[in-house]
Picture 1 (cartoon, rainbow over the protein chains, first blue to last red):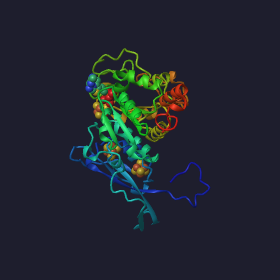
Picture 2: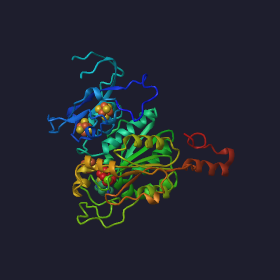
Picture 3: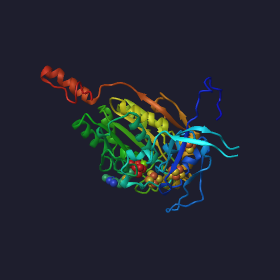
Picture 4: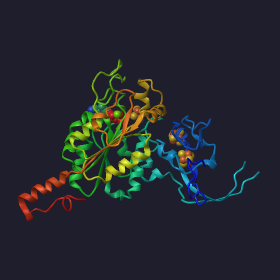
Length: 93
Length: 297
Ligand SMILES: Cc1ncc(C[n+]2csc(CCOP(=O)(O)OP(=O)(O)O)c2C)c(N)n1
Ligand code: SF4
Ligand code: SF4
Ligand code: SF4
Ligand SMILES: [Mg+2]
């Protein structure tokens, strides 16, 4: 995570993590979630739902900070985020 | 290299958090792809949740229109009234049950055109209700006719060469009629909109929140503005936060900058305060104030 200044309590700071749930059938492919996710976690997929829309897909699961913006902007109530706590985590490089 | 990740869920949310407020048997809703109305409903849901209001004491009233569907989708005491009559219905509900929080959720055409007289008089009397007005600059549900909010030169089904009528500046209309709280945000400002709805719901008196929201199918299409996502991007680039701005200066021209923020937040006795004070003066102790306390809820 990038900060515009280093927080004084950086050693204690824990960046929240989120796990996304996408209700593909309800999605109308508007792209609001993809466009406004501050971490670029989502992309519209090539997959079609039964109404012919492309639901989003999680492309950077480890980047999600559980900010809920995708959930709040989604006009179709098709995506939501659940907070998870990473107790032990090493990221693949 | 492999990863070692042990994860613990903080909250078990197996269903979408909006399901708490929605009548799920009616979902998916009828709103078009990239329509902004659904997002404004989320702002209301989050506001209600954050205020920890008992949903048994919240009522929502809509008129007719795409936005007018909101009452029918919300799992509150909800009333889908006739076109333009959401505010008088809400006023009656408030007077009969002053213990309820009464919310009007409707469109620009419904509230400002056919319902315009109700709006100005309910604001004038400072009736303690909250009005959320989704302004998409058009009569959307009926096919995109010109509305009293359509900016000059914007095209609609009934202004194919561009509108030439002066539109209403809604915050000015609400403020000059007597509203004690007036704010405007766009659907993109969903968090700030949530804060505004919370403030409006907590305010004693007539509170009014205008939400500029994309109508992709009619307003955007007839004006060749792209999709609702393009309108969201337009709001992103053209909204200017101007808290405390004089409502006279926040009119919206076609594809102009959009002033957003809290424009009015003042204190004034409510309709029930005035009623109780007037009768107390006349009848003294014989008069029992209506609506609990001195009109307080
Ligand atoms: C008395 C009456 N007149 C006209 C109509 C037709 N009508 C239905 S919705 C509507 C306009 C709604 O516009 P708005 O309130 O802006 O809602 P939107 O669909 O844009 O969300 C009109 C004129 C009606 N239903 N009843
Ligand atoms: S919760 Fe925030 S960070 Fe995670 S996907 Fe949604 S918008 Fe992106
Ligand atoms: S915001 Fe909702 S409807 Fe739009 S693409 Fe994302 S999940 Fe689908
Ligand atoms: S017609 Fe316009 S306002 Fe109505 S649902 Fe479609 S996009 Fe939304
Ligand atoms: Mg409208």
